[in-house]
Image 1 (cartoon, rainbow, N blue to C red):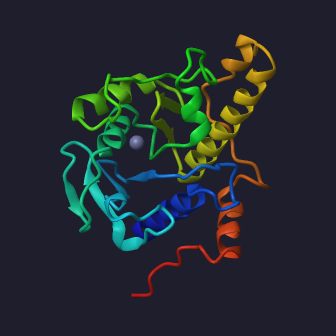
Image 2: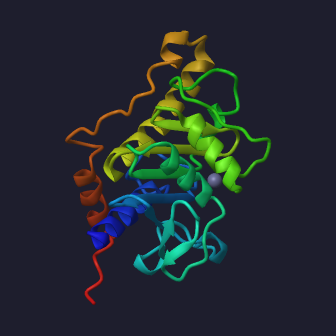
Length: 231
Ligand SMILES: [Zn+2]
């Protein structure tokens, strides 16, 4: 079970790395994917690989750590912890229905996070700091998310929450693709409010083009699929 969770985290991380031709995400991706381990008081997330200059394409099984949601302490793994783990902990505390959190910095969603108009009716969280790295800010972010599938951090990135890794991955790609469309449409004229407040529910995975199976196939075609360690 844990090995499969780790594999799915690595799949999502590699799919979201850009540009790799798998998604519409075009600008350099950095960020992290986490998953809550049943029965629910811990999650697995990437360690602090950014300090070593590594992208999410370069991470492997040894880079994943297990974190206690309440204390924020590392209970398994050897990599240093991310300061932004408080985002993941804050969402898991606030949303018992959420098992996967993705925090990334995609270009178009971040551009639209800086304007007053709402993007798909999503909540915005701004603590006055560019980074969310204190437990109090992480908990406030979790509350600000409400029942929404995603939240914007102005000028920084997005937080996406879902019950499965597949759904979180599909939602993250959907949000970025929709943001890119909204940006370009806004250059041609005023976008009606009803489109800007489209919905706060997760878009569902489809069979072709945006399901985990399709993403796994795409990674395999590129030789990027994270095969499980043999030992
Ligand atoms: Zn961030």
